[in-house]
Image (cartoon, rainbow, N blue to C red; front, side, top):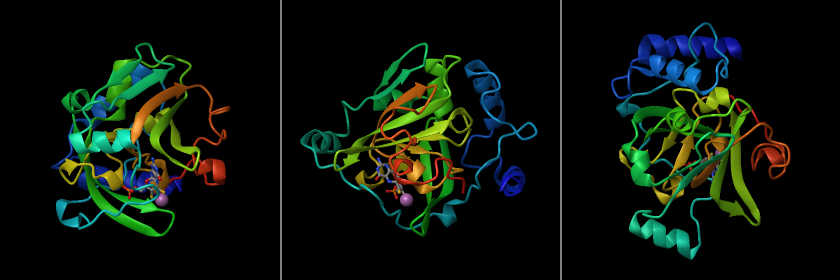
Length: 245
Ligand SMILES: Nc1nc2c(c(=O)[nH]1)N[C@H]1C(S)=C(S)[C@@H](COP(=O)(O)O)O[C@H]1N2
Ligand SMILES: [Mo]
């Protein structure tokens, strides 16, 4: 698995590391950001993080299906969706120096990255889409991580019955240059089915890690005591927490 990741990473560096669409300065960015945030917080192989493969515009799937929850049937959500989410906030809280409450406007005003990646769902389908949004590392850099922070927990607006959807990752993935808080798919605001207005892209992992309908990011030192303690809605039901592709 590791060897495959290294090879994929090298492939990305040679063929797609400096993508025409993505920003080219990712290496400098992540190293600076990561050092400011938490020294040594991400595992490096050699000097560079392993990258998920990036594709070209010609590879984009004509239709990016929705999976899991594809709508939210509350009056508040429907009113927000109809008006372009003027009151939506993404909170950043927990083990941070400066808790944030970001509007979509503020999120769109941050430096943006666009990347074309393949989404792989454990249910046996894949799709290639172009995602745009700030890097999560940019947002975490604004909030400032406390040294005890070990995991990012992603809170979502939807649930299955009474159980809220949620996800989590370690700081290696949270600070990875391809981990985005995406607000666009294929150059348009996210459709409802794909997680409007904000969803996580965490490209080295399987579909269920890519939390949709994001409302908050919590920095914690342990996943114990959060919902079922498994670090995610599906993990609490037996799926792997580290869902490497
Ligand atoms: N909030 C939330 N996020 C979610 C899900 C969900 O049901 N709710 N389903 C997950 C699963 S299993 C997959 S494969 C992807 C599907 O993303 P898509 O709907 O954009 O295809 O979202 C993931 N994130
Ligand atoms: Mo999935």
